[in-house]
Image (cartoon, rainbow over all chains, first blue to last red; front, side, top):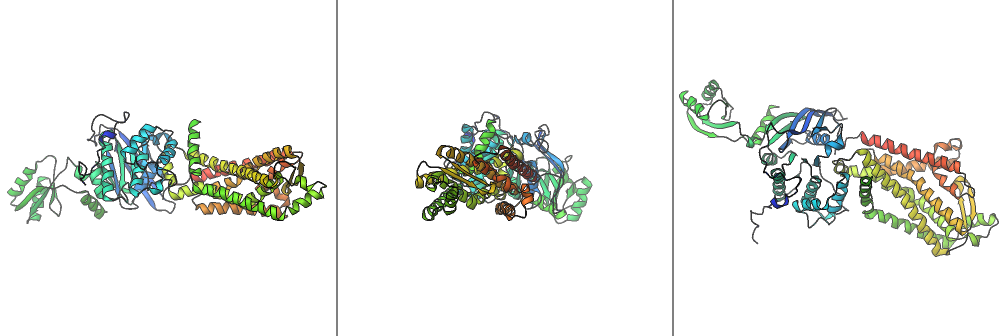
Length: 332
Length: 281
């Protein structure tokens, strides 16, 4: 059997014809200070009744059109942030604002703009996928059969939508979960570990779908995961939570445009560090050199050579999210 | 308002799409048939004694209505409270336990509205189930005794003994079944209230049944005679007054005022408990 064109990838392009949503332009640049923050998390603190501190003064923003990854180990507090954002968990202090509306003060208004998969999406097994969508959409006060059909087709469930969800595989349930989150036309999607339990094929399909949503509809997405690869491949920025504290917020390393990092190979590590230090650059113990913004990389190489450092190799280095995450973990 | 009904339709769809709901109806019909067969085989000894003791013809009052009343009484006593507690105990606790609640509350719907929908669903179900019981009992009574005859109504809890002809009897039977339906919403309300806590659905069901049973035992034990007005089953039994030849309306209204006040209080407390909960696994 011949694989479908595009190596088995689905083309979602023709399915993004919702007139209310389509921007007409492909949206790629995201971390732009001119864009408004669609979701603001402000000084969230939450202590569970057991006394455990779940969140400790966590603040960050999700800007319009960006995909922000919320990263952390199990129990770090990621789902608690999601829960507070959806008004299901009450913070001790702080608030979440969606499109300028406080979830804690005007939950109904704030949640009009959100679609979410929060923790494992559990559907009513004795209802069909379609009936599940109907029940859920009625709670948003909305039902548009044409739009529902479009979204069902987009998540590739059109053949199974009238079957009982008891017969669905895990992947189909996740796709149904995404469909319900996309109805009715949210501005921001909250996805809580959406690829948990999916097979590699399912993960790839899910990832492509999410990226298409952002690219074609300008959807703002907050994605919660403990899978570094998932965050790295999908997100523009990430917030790393460790034991309830925000330990990092910034671009995903592989998406970094402004930082220039090089790998220096030399037998004179000590001398090299001294020379680079004099030039205003820093180098870690693995020879990773960060070039200051006011310098050109070749200026540093010149300085090294003039400082009599034996340079065996000097090549651009792309820092991985894993390195960043592990670095933060080892620091704390 | 239209939106509210659409949302309520969603709740009813969930309830009536479950096989268990129909198994429950089936179980009730089966129980009614068993009771009917027992009546057919062994007769209605105590009823016969009461009718004959009052100087009336048992043959005339041994009718579909009298049989239906007896069958319905036993069915509600044996299974009604259990099944209503089961449904109402599930309605919040099970959805919380299974994770459905998180899916529902990720929508821009308030917890109050969601609970109100669920409360109306389980109390509406209680009312509907009792009507189902009343009229299936009546149909079975018709099968056994046919159309016509008198109606001998006896409700010892409220000291009601009454004799009716077919037409007025049928009216009283219909009205009393509506009133019994209203009374039984309190069983659902107790289970619903317990269901709003972070507990297992079975715990809510058992808790509600225990409460009703203890209340019932206390009411019939004698030593609580001076405090009967504190017992909810006392007020729930107001439905029986509808069968009295001269209805004591002030007592009926008082009984139902208490029933509605209890229901409202239980809903409000349940909502307060649910509202204060953090919904996270």
